Length: 357
Image (cartoon, rainbow, N blue to C red):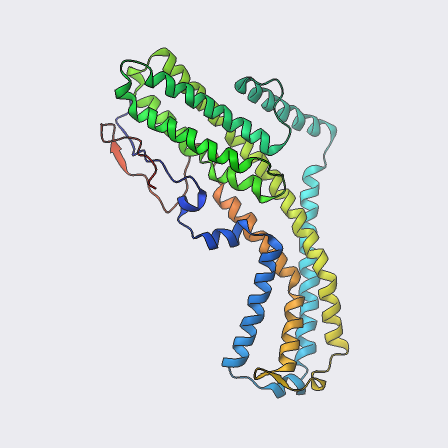
């Protein structure tokens, strides 16, 4: 038995609580509809332009008397064409990953089939579900079932009092599994409803804690309890490769959505930029609205519309990069900077602490 380990304290049930982020930030980065986020980005840009116009040194005459408007939108044409070319190149890279000779495709299918068979043997089911959300639910339900078996094994004996720490761990795992299972119910792949519960399920901590308790009480465990521990750890280990596989598919799905969104926005943006370069005459727009020059309002709005492809790209990349950051490690590793595990010895003070509510 090792002499040192980390304090075992049950973390919060959601990723947001574990990393200490606000609801608004998590909503903006990953939960919100990406087209809504695109609208928020464009609206914020337009409001910033109006703030600069009102509070910064400005001259409405410059908008009319110079060639600033054609120059501005000509640069936008170059930027749009360049960005579309870049996005198409990324899309081709994603497509290239899906195109390969028969041998590679057969190996991919063999690997997936073998993994499904291992899960089916562990879960005791004939055929595992084909939907990603239901497949993940099967993994979580398997871990929950084995946690119940372990809990029954340590609480049903005459020496159950010394295993209170194990009982607290298994009860917390069962409770959290139910929450994540409910969140996954009915979720369709491609929507973030499938991936967010997966991020909330901190299997890395669960594996680490199970292995730590297994090692800590190794000399006191009966053969049945030790076998129950091993079964639980095995079922939790299935979750890592499954999560990474579905995350990879999800990222590919999102890259396709990014490409489509940028292409949808590119042609209208180019049309607006072309009109502003060829025929737009700011001198024909007179008057003001709430003290703001009307020509500036119109030009700013049209300029923001040409930013649509970039706003779509930014909205989707915010989600993809956040997901990638939160799932960098596979296995019992925790990379969060916000919560450090305190080193203590394997003594009575090292206990699984229940979640603070």
